[in-house]
Image (cartoon, rainbow, N blue to C red):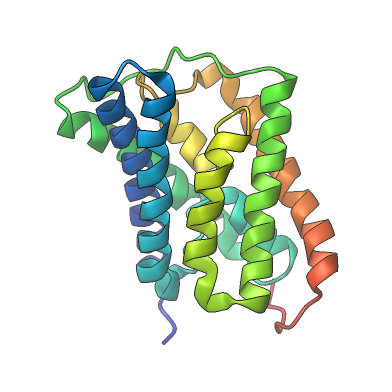
Length: 225
């Protein structure tokens, strides 16, 4: 069944909101339960990987479950998503990401609107975001090509792993990064650090389209641009 654009945009906004709400909310919960940073990060990691499996499974049939401007960019570059709909998708994702952070604050009785003070910047962090986004987009492209039914689990497991093997804890998503700039809690990032992260995520997505796209070839009919 083909869904109209308003339903698809709503699915993208809702999915990104629930994703960011999970990232921020689990970070707040973990930070309140332990002073051990490694344990808190684990408490942040597992819910994030788990919610991705759920969200991609239930919303993927509606919108494709991008929840990520870097993923939308990758599909548009491969002509598997309309360029005309790329901007509305990205806007819905960003709006959803911000709403998700505010919702998490409301649930934990915190100040609703916040600005993060957490420093996340520098070449190692940017390189980590290139790697994280490259791996995420590559996982999605190869997963769709070879095991489409496994994509929710592949993405959830990849992000769970990437939280721990990347120096940046694997944002890998401009909409999530922007949403996390609106929380001064465990998972936040200063707004001034966003441009470096977003640029790195874009580079990672393009590299995945080029390299992983070349590796897997094509088996889809191009969409109208």
